[in-house]
Image (cartoon, rainbow, N blue to C red; front, side):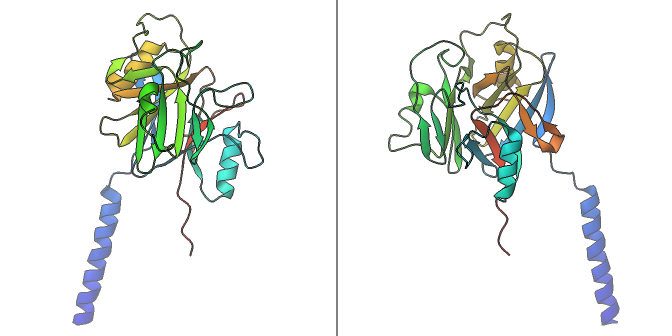
Length: 259
């Protein structure tokens, strides 16, 4: 009788686990299509507390990574598969970052505070950074006072700010004629979710900024680049080719635990 009862309980437990597995909703994909204001976008969202968000520029051989596949191959060799990547800021012809760039605690380029030509110099611009368990998007002048004792582990400066404290950049116009493919990053109001977005059709700055503020609810968002904007997201079968890149922002899996 006891053996039969134990068998019955075991069968019930197994059935319960099977039922839970069948009825539980699958985890949401990190990257999903989003339609906004008549334009298609792809948005990849990551929990700051769980995602390993990093910046990459230089391969161990001393040359820029330049391509997503080259970075993916290195990450695979290191046991930290590449889950997501996007061009992570503007760069010079030799792929050096235009403004501040910090990788794994090492500053490779300094903060630029002056106005200048092009989108980068359209003030206010800002810095996307990651340090320990926190991430931030901070206007350039405010960033200068944020880390008085050193740099965060990762930081990339770009511009312009798309959204600053809930307001769109003052130079954006709803009828702006400059329409390009664009990519950027925004941070949720509680600072715990990072949203990376790329337009899948040409859009102007105003529409792109409103995607972050009005659809994604990010009070601060930063433009990363345009025209060269590309996405690596194997979860949705995206690995976009193109010209060599400079800084790359990426999410990698944690190294596997040793047996």
